[in-house]
Image (cartoon, rainbow, N blue to C red; front, side):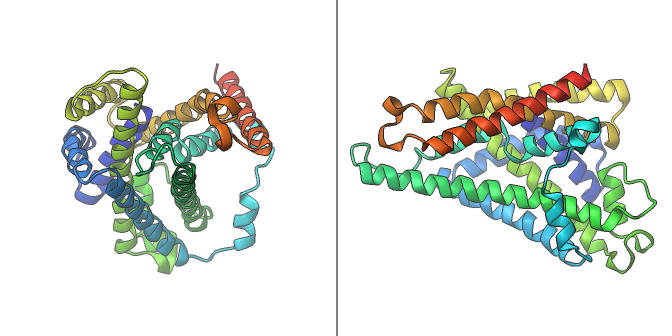
Length: 324
């Protein structure tokens, strides 16, 4: 639901930027994305993987072209990859950092990628085929996660390079959209094409989110809860439930860009908080020799897995402590 929520709001904002649709109309229009998801699912799981990867690479190419037109400082960018004590001192920085973490990895992707490993054709009784299937699954997950990481990084670099030194308050995506075509803000780099591509990239990411959250929801509901519903019913139910907090926030504070973009950040932080609940069992199960056999984790993978999960847990607890 948290993933779905970010997809709904992101798509609605993109529709507003591209076509001038009011936010409320865009949100209601996202109910119809069930038809898009059903259309994609007719292609089969393997083709969907390629479609999603192509869409991710398209978004990466758009942001890459926009960043490529700016005056980059590679040393500063590389230095920015190293975490600093600021996230422990600055509550807003910690929240944004965890939001980025939740938006990049996302708990449901762990279930989705695990399930996709079984979508390949292989003989359970042939160890060589099982090993090969797992190797390809690892490559799939690695490429998708690296692509997500690069896109998030490009978006941050774009914002930092173009807007950090301006006096204009870029409080929401609408302001960024307007800023990208305003010579007074970004100088000679201003272009209506840049701003339109920015909005188009937002629209694509919203659709990607809908597809992946639908597939992950199917895996969890059928594999864990043993609830089997026709896809359109489950998708419609999830979407309608997701709309409840959106309309509640809208009624309380109004259907404004700023309010809904804050809601996106909170939803992504919720994904970060949910990550350890998914990661601890995953590391424990894949480190179980009797369960995994020859495919059990190396000892360093287990140590690294638990170590990183504990760091994420600690940061989440620190954030919750500051909030309450």
